[in-house]
Image 1: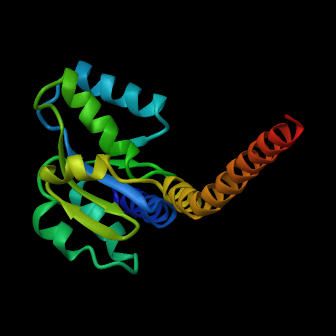
Image 2: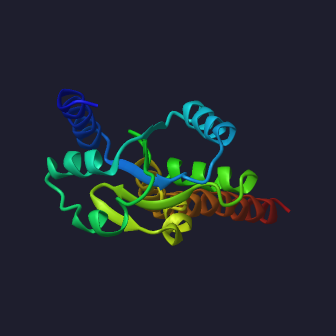
Image 3: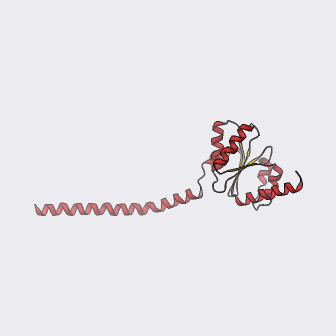
Length: 177
């Protein structure tokens, strides 16, 4: 690979890192070709882009960004590295890795992830990353919490009106009798 090719790959990676706030760096070195093809197919089906890139090129692309990715240089950018990009969700790639590991034990390891410029290093972070809520889910939770008191007040007013009507009816029937 000549210098121009490397420059083009670094430029492409820099743009992907800048445009995708969620990316995962994995180690899939122990996988066979068939297992790798399964992983790529699963990524495609779930809208996740998966690329295998040299660590030095990843490092140079990360240097072009504003976030400090120095911890990645020390522990993540070693050995075989594959990158998973998802433009909308920080947990979809983690869920994909967990699902893939159910069928293919010890095939892929999470080396590190960047979720909205927050760094997560190590495979032990996988469960926590898979349980993250998306921005839309968090907004939905806040709206539900804000609506809850209003629904309680409206329910109380409606049930109070029904009780009042029942009392008036009972009193009118007593007077008539």
